[in-house]
Length: 280
Image (cartoon, rainbow, N blue to C red; front, side, top):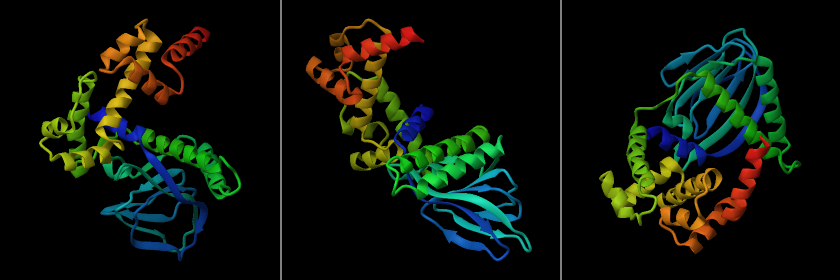
């Protein structure tokens, strides 16, 4: 269930880009002992840089992506008599209060499989970011390109684990609650019940839950109910009234919630999904 908690966290991830650019680093360029409240993503287009992330020291090569997480003491400099270029992006990626790269135990540096493709994607990210005032969709495209680059980073980094920290412990606790909710979709679940399950005070519990998932327990429960309902409408002949009963809802409330969640009625959703599956 820890993977489900992480999946819920990622599905509610909010991203904000504060800067993106191409930059050539001369021999006099450096940032020493910097503590930032944003993440830094660098794509190195040449050798000659030195990076320190906490106690870790790196000498990135051409074609490597490097993540410098928020809230970590950082130093970046050009080696003596060297010069190199890089793309960079400053961003936040969080659900609730928790930054993604403070939660994950991922490598700091990875090799990309296609340097030309990554360069082109990062260049497009920079272009759309700087065109955000003129293009209606430019910031959205910049975020999508950042997400794609972060996916590449995580996929090339091998198996990503949760960091053994207070955040990881919170995720374990929330995982227990998510498992409980998945088995009680039809029940009238109270906040104090969930808090008692993990031995937290209700006020503290709801803060921890939102910091991990990005939503409240009732919002998460309703999301899961609607995900189940969508599955039933798409892959079974279950009646709408039975689906409502299975998630502990009246027919009226179910119909209202389903349309809010999907934008269409349950019967229309079933019809559209069936038609699409026949076309595949």
